[in-house]
Length: 314
Image 1 (cartoon, one colour):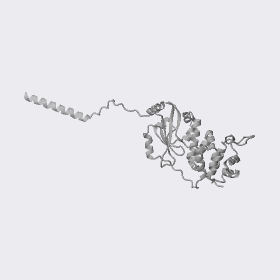
Image 2 (cartoon, rainbow, N blue to C red):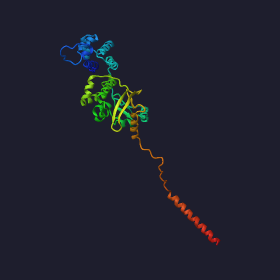
Image 3 (cartoon, rainbow, N blue to C red):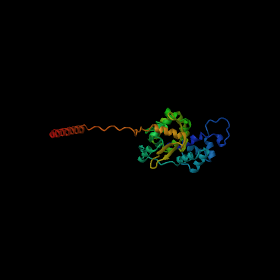
Image 4 (cartoon, helix red, strand yellow):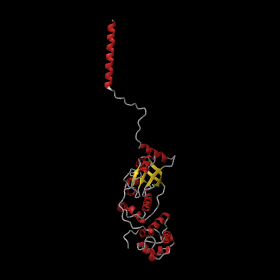
């Protein structure tokens, strides 16, 4: 046995419990004591022995062939993203020394870019930490600020939950995307800390995490109920940042010419600094009192000289 986490076994067991006998054409007779499929039913449908499948679940065999994994994916009704995840788990990885966590640093060019974008934009790390954000992103959600974590806020911050009218559905995709992003690097201290905290503090997260759902985060429409400008429907995009360990540039943008675009423009105008009026009278320049006194003294001397000339003429 090994002290490494049994990621493959945990995953196929969780997915087995989500597939009903009816979905795979197995008649239900009497009372079933287990949720989903039995181990021997999965093995039969995948064309492998029940003993071999048991070894896979228990982590006693961690090197199944691609053919076996693809058969299991078919039986467990996995989509393309989940199948790719299963294949990565089955491929294993070499044993590494635990690395000291490195600080995630946003490339300087990207940090400059988001400040110039007229759209809500931020950079998030592999574990959904907000690493950089522009002012419009923070105006859209105060949680989109450096130091925040999107996963934690989604489950533990009531204000963030109120911002998303479809919260129940949106967090399903958020957790599935988080698992896909992390992959097999589950020994990272940051991952352990975050998942442990949320598993204890949020029953909803704990249930979703136990499902082992996996999905790639792709562009989608998101609804936001903003307290200042009202309901917004925005396109949400995540773009990979080259040369980083999983950092993403995330942008919200509205469809052009819609009420959503007008509302976002209104929110942007509300955070702009006031501009000084062009017709404002500039303040008077400070008077040089010394120069003024010299001018008055010179004028007095000139007047005295003219009087002296007049007296001589008389």
